[in-house]
Length: 168
Image 1 (cartoon, rainbow, N blue to C red):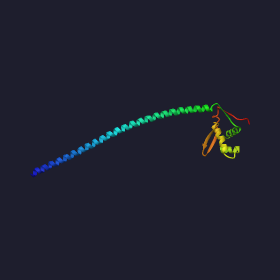
Image 2 (tube, rainbow, N blue to C red):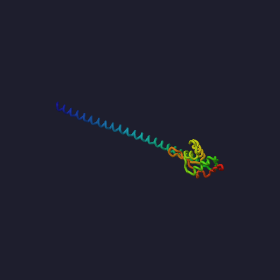
Image 3 (cartoon, rainbow, N blue to C red):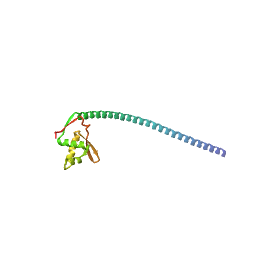
Image 4 (cartoon, rainbow, N blue to C red):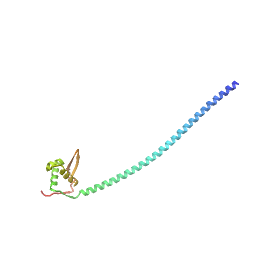
């Protein structure tokens, strides 16, 4: 009987070994199935994300083109209106303003402090007010250089402007 027992034990060991092999293969197959299904889901999700991003990119590009077209039209309209406003106009100047304009032309560029010394003002307020008024009328150009504001006469800017000043 011992032979039969030994033989049964060997068969039992063999069956255990085969069962372990099959279960490990089954586990590998299950793992491979899980990984493949996860990969499939990942690929599908990436495709959906790419389509969504493509759609958003197209919409943004379309909006940018619309904005560029509108800005171009608005800028062109603004330039036309600005040209119409500047061209063919008369600007009456007081005797004081014409004196300031001659001073600016002689110096090429001045700040309010220069005008204070030239006009012998006590403070800078009057000088700043006069220069700002001439800037708003389109006669002078204004430049911020550091902490000071400088004003300059640009004859090319006022080619269609008739400056009327009283006789001196």
